[in-house]
Image (cartoon, rainbow, N blue to C red):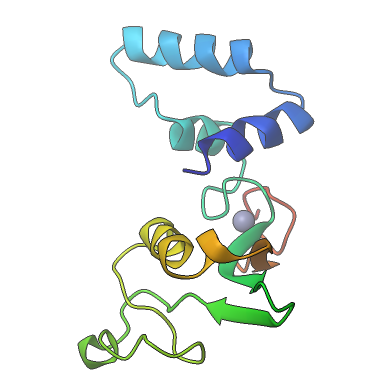
Amino acid sequence: MRKGNLLANLAKRGYDQGEVRSWRQRQHDAGRPSTLKDFLAAHQLCTACDSTGEKIVGCWWRDTRGVKHTQKLQERGGSEEDADQTSSDDVGPGGPDDGEKVTEMFDRFLKNAVEWGYLTELCDVCGGTGQTPP
Ligand SMILES: [Zn+2]
């Protein structure tokens, strides 16, 4: 779901969409790995954060009364018994994948929000540079 952001981010780094596409086509034709992640890895870009330098750790939103809420995504590998305690704003949502969880949060909270955005943290793999650490 962050594919659009990833392409926009690659453009900022000087790789336009056509270039990415032709690289992937060449890789594919040669029978080599050709996903966007492979592109990142081949160009020394951080695959943990899609070279954005930050990761999405949750969402914030403002409800119709103007009250601001924040909801953090739960880290992968959280215990199963937390999974059904997600009715309160203070408890992290469950789920196996962060993309899915943002979608779940959207369904539960954000579609009625008047304003919302992602909570982000610096990527701990690349330290925010978006590039593969040396
Ligand atoms: Zn990173």
